[in-house]
Image 1 (cartoon, helix red, strand yellow):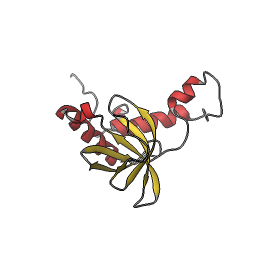
Image 2 (cartoon, rainbow, N blue to C red):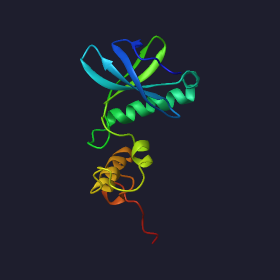
Image 3 (cartoon, rainbow, N blue to C red):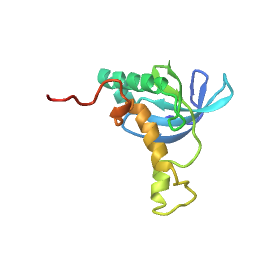
Image 4 (spheres, helix red, strand yellow):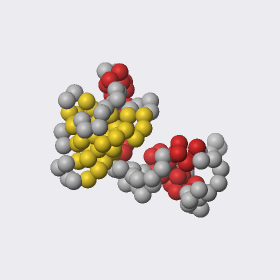
Length: 145
């Protein structure tokens, strides 16, 4: 479902496509109501008719809404306009992961110091610290005695 620049969904006007994946297509859009650029993630037509995928899309929206972490982009809302469901997300400028990987090994201006810990920190927020049992309230193992 390629969306042409200029198409409007409520107060959002599509500027350009940023990427496509298994769960949706992501576009840069301008929010005329608030005067800012955002990313919108649109469900492809085939996915939009699949109740299981719709539930997954809703879970993604709720999970993002529950997070507040500097290494995870924020969500501004879950919308529907003209029969199209989409998430309104924080637009984070910069290179895509694909662009960084395509440049090959080397620094290329990417701040690598601290990158693994920042990535781990953001991922840990997504899974609620499941990789750090010592921070969970319940013990991760019990004595067999």
